[in-house]
Amino acid sequence: MAYTYKDYIDQDNILIDGDNEQRFSMYVPFRIQDSNSQVLIIMRNPSKANELNSDMTINNVLSFCHGKYSGVFVANLFPFYAKDPRLLNQHIGTSHYKKLMDKNKKTIDEILDKNPRIKHVIIAWGVNKSKLQGQYEDTIAGILKIVNKHEKTIFAMRFTSSNQPWHPRNWGGEDSGYQLELYEWMTDAYEDAYGCRVNHFCL
Image (cartoon, rainbow, N blue to C red; front, top):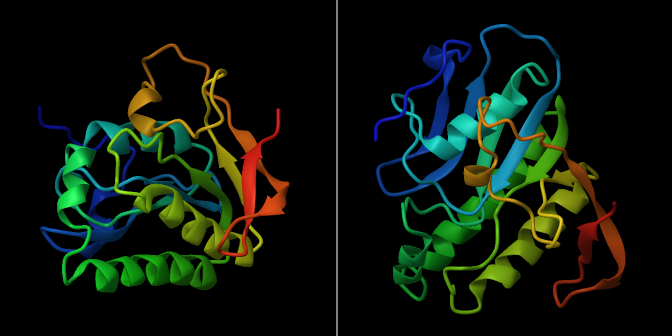
């Protein structure tokens, strides 16, 4: 199914850092700037969206953020395009994997450093259903360390029965009837192996 951007998206000014194989970041501005603030969404990996076409996940993100922010930065734990996240395993251990993952972390760091209008960071990577060979939790820890360095308030959607952030494919979009609510992702009292404090939901 082909997804298009809604009329409230300033599609001519969408910015993509990436190519047909990887997407390190994406910036999507709204036509009407209801707010001066921006938001960074960090998901698992890119699926299809680019300058020309959207996808269900991105449309759900933009629907939620419309009217709250002037624009949305999108980044991911893993920069590799994959409709099925289990396919991310094919990149682990390859010669290019570490280089691209390092660039991905650097991109997130630079987004936060160069865009002081970013008011919130929303984490939205979902649970580790793809069995990423031990890489999932380690990658999350590294990304959280970067975000914590910039002292940004972190939020997430959540299931009531889980402490994992809710992936935007489940947000439902503007016609779903869901009452979506962000919860602050609070810092707990212990640190992981990376030296960054592990975060959990505060209800």
